[in-house]
Length: 308
Image (cartoon, rainbow, N blue to C red; front, side):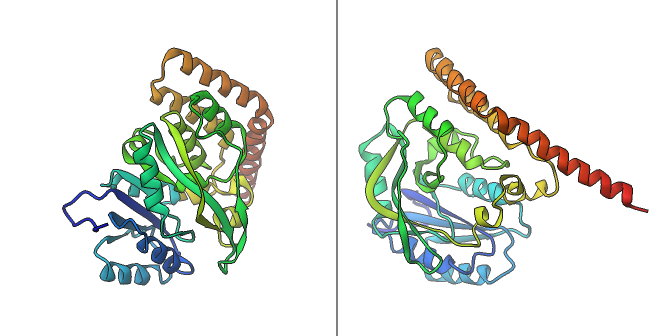
């Protein structure tokens, strides 16, 4: 397929958020630029990298007219960077691409075809294989979520109640549907809330072929920050050293997601009932938020009192 020119709207916008991504970035870029569907633009948003990321990105800009590079002078966090890219999407479809994952050559072609064939689907993601830092296969990743269900409440229920890796957030999404959501909020695990909100907009089409290679490595945010409460600054750098209440924030954002969806009354009430059930089963997590915030506040007060 012919690549889109500067003034022509591409079918797909690929958004690559980066920060100190030199280790795997070239492999990721090569896999994206080798797609059999060439009608896309690729926008890289650099959160003020301090390594060779900028040099790598500018080399790709010079080699392929579909690539654009935007550098920011400071790191504002992953949420801000993801949202920045979404707002600059010109394509009918949008895909975030992590700077350490790899897509097989037919990834875009298959996903766009699936969305063209199914107007009721808002997102498409192929099956995944997990790979290590050397690119060797660890094994397939499968989930038990009913994301392709016609029943909106089933999709909502599964996304609220079943723990899973958020690989679908890197699927191909209808840009119009994405922009009607709250996008990637500046709070811990906001990608989970975004997927739940997208599921209120429509089904997730899934392709059985394993065209997505997700890299597991020690530099991943979830590896560096194994404790949920330590991940706040990764999503939003302003959160460093501040207490966080992720479970309470989830509840608040889920309510907002239902409100934004403007569903018929019966579906709205059903979603709230599911949310109430989720809140009941999460009661220990709500309490844990307060305990963690109390520990942080206590340490901060001790430091202040210890100052001369």
